[in-house]
Image 1 (cartoon, rainbow, N blue to C red):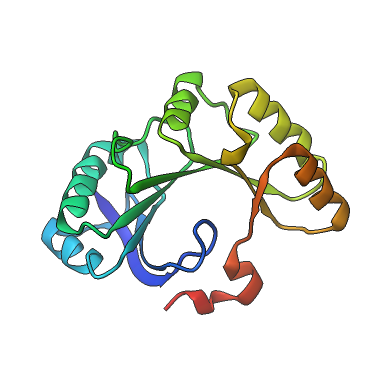
Image 2: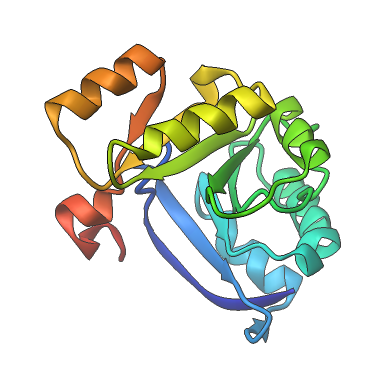
Amino acid sequence: MKIRGTYSGFSTTMNIGHNSFFVDLDTNGVDLSLKEFIDNAVNFNYIIIRNIDRDDVKELNFLIKKLLAASLKLKIELNIDGTFTPPNAGVYERVIYNTYINSEIFYEKKTIKWLKDVGANFIFTLTKEEDLNDINSFVRQYEIDKNKIFLKMEMVDERTLSLIKICGYNITFDMNNIIGDICVA
């Protein structure tokens, strides 16, 4: 598994405020030894793994098992795009799936079903009020529980917030957009 970089900081979008170990995967990154990676990661209670690619699935599943065995207090958050079935780590209660949905991408029903079955959060970026129509269609099409829908807001106004309440969705904010990069150490 290739890693572009790791850093510590505070979780900024979901489960906001956790002192976290961030891992950015990248096919053009460097290989990091499993021991070195785990030695760094277990110093944190929260690990956020981003930019997961279909090719990372097998190695990532192995890594998750090793990390969870190395620390009983550890939680892992996997940020994925929902276009493929991620590592079969859904059996672990300490793994959280955050699926960033793009309305311009086609999603396979079996992948979305798998994500629903493991309790994934579905995150949409809301840039304008009209985006709610696409979100509502997606939620109906895939029969997703509204308590698993989070709208990352790039704009906030009273009318849109009222519509979100009526729809029964959750909201989240990217703390870096609000307070800048001070969340990253």
